[in-house]
Image 1 (cartoon, one colour):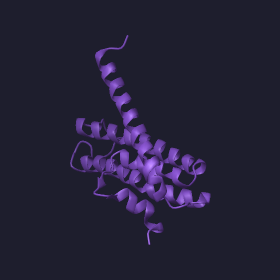
Image 2: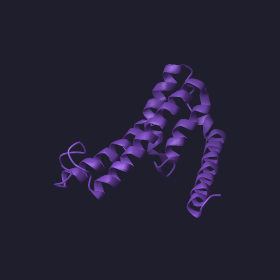
Image 3: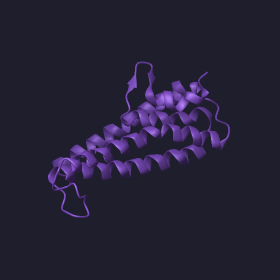
Length: 153
């Protein structure tokens, strides 16, 4: 039987899966016509890598948080190889590890999708990135500007 914390996590995961399916469904239904054709796999991979710049930016921010924490901590400035991490660095390091795991999974998944999807279906790549924490600003998100820039005239 699941305890209260496990049930809470399960509810959160279920809500996240439903929200993801809804957003991706709307993206495919309404934004697909806005996608450039991307007929060649080289075009789809280039598009995907441009979109994944945001994933790498999140990872860089997590690395910077650990580096900043170490810089301002006399006990931690030497790095994790020389001493036990202090409490603040331990939390930042855990966030960095989690971010690294998610970034690797996201980039590889996006590249696999680039090899499988065609045309308007490719909208799932920028939509999945935008959904994961890069907010839309008005009608055009920063993700859209970077992903679509080469095709905007």
